[in-house]
Image (tube, rainbow over all chains, first blue to last red):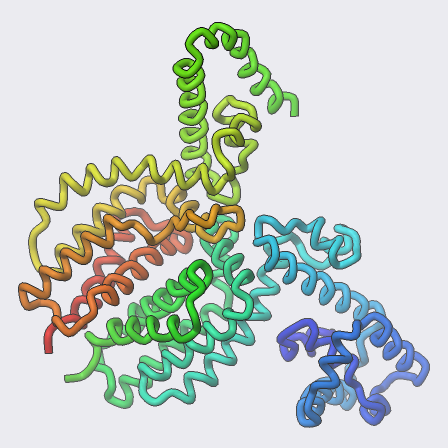
Length: 280
Length: 225
């Protein structure tokens, strides 16, 4: 039932924010008795760390409203609040994900074991396995969270672009900016994506497909506007653009390239790949 | 477990020969060391090609080579180093093939580029999983900082540059284009064509076809205006 909120929560911490951020007035709307309601709320406050309160303090009022709304909506319908057990399970997942994210960043995909992740999360390996089938499942979950955020950022950036080249460049720049702050995790993701075992699932992830579609969309719009020729081979060009985008990550990971350098190179690549499809 | 320890013990059986080696210490020791290295490299090549980079463990490589895990580590610092040496050892074969083929490459700029990449795919594709291991290893934490495996083949870069410069001379490539930028795009297309092995189990033919189309599209955009 908590899945109702899940898709809106890009990060586990955001989920906790939502739970912890129930204002007294909205709590009054919830269809649970005052006692159990308080129990739930206390439980959240006990188990959620200072991180949540800190994040909560930073939220603007408008954002708070946004976070409350799914729960309010739930309160107005016949759907019940999550049980204490469901809530605890959700928190366990969030804790495991946070610990896993840190360990994957510090030790790479191979270097981080389920045992270490469980220890870092302060629980048994059994508890981890109760929530995730294996390490690759855990990693995919983390990537899915990030890629959902990334897809949103890319879509917004593309919309601000003037012309197809600029739109694509803004999209890619959004990607580089997003991962620049977490290159070790990006490195782990590349490592997994090239493995014959876990690679296909990561590459076939819906959010990766969404990014590809977003590139294709930009090309289709450019054809509509008359920037590119009708027979621009959208599918092939989309893949080449995506490959070029990805191919720059090793520069950032290994050579420490700046965002500007990455963008400069991406711009050249976009130009070359689009050149043959330009009109005139 | 027992079988794993059986192997090293059998190998340890060669140690009684060591005192004899002391009369002419460097050569025999050297030969033994060399033999161990080669056995490890051969075993590793097979295992990386069948298990992938993550799947192949040092322990298994040692077992497959019939040497102790310890003696793998006296020769190599890490799994990543073993793989980079396996790949380095293969380069001789690749370069010999290039030396044989390149002088005979003819045609337009696109044709010539296709022939060059064709040699690379034909060489690596029969052991595509080994090459995927090579790419995956680029992101390995344990890799020594000096190792920059994937996408840094200087010979390939040089061949592409030569080919493009000739394209400029022959009026097929716009001289205003930055050659290095074109090389970057070509290399990105090349490296990521191996993705097809993962997503659809592509062979050399399929990868060459995919790359040919990409080359066509890139070169189309290089024409002088």
